Image (cartoon, rainbow, N blue to C red; front, side, top):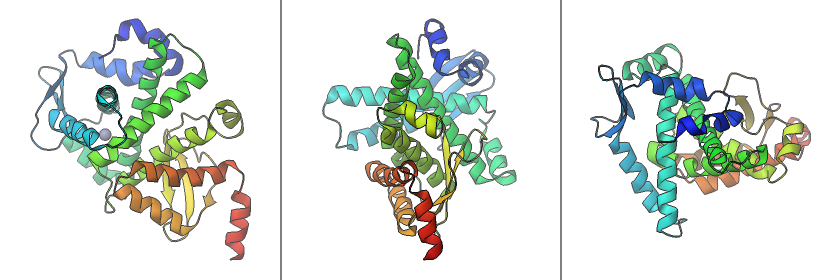
Length: 288
Ligand SMILES: [Zn+2]
């Protein structure tokens, strides 16, 4: 997929976990990575005898079909570029699941049974976010660029590309709240990057690193919001509250997978965090 050997040192500058999350699983897959039509809706299978990763062409076709439905693409070149980007993100996402030792269907079922659906939601969000980080780092490495601003701009582009198509392809229905949290978390990370604009450094000085994967929990009736660092860190900002109507609308929009509207709503929430309106919001909520 990439000339990894050549690009590795430059990618590591932005993603110190490259070896753990991408190189190590690739080394385990000495038979390579291939695309095949797999029965069922598994994203991929590992052929243990051949040590090969087989990615499901049905999923790739669904991704392409959803790209062709987009109104936002101006021409053939943009369509091809987005298709390539999404295949890269898809392959990286699944490789990261191999690094998580989570690649057999029965193991995923055990995780849901013994841990929780939210644990799976977090691991999926983490795989999404890491895949976007790695793509951003590869783009920096290819252009021989350095600097955190460039990396964060590429991360924003990768997250937008992913979120434009992934929720439509993989679904975030109301009866799967962990899937809704996964895509809402990704939208919130995107919204923070978007709102921080060209002043990433000022944001990071005041709040948290903008490449933090965020897993959110919402009080559907209360409007409470908890934003967790999905890598096992704590809350990325203090707990806060928004109008319950906003929370309801966010969930309705992610269920129909309308990313531009989800992002617009997520930006409203993020803007309140950034403008320091939380204290006044909390005050008004407690006096209401
Ligand atoms: Zn996954």
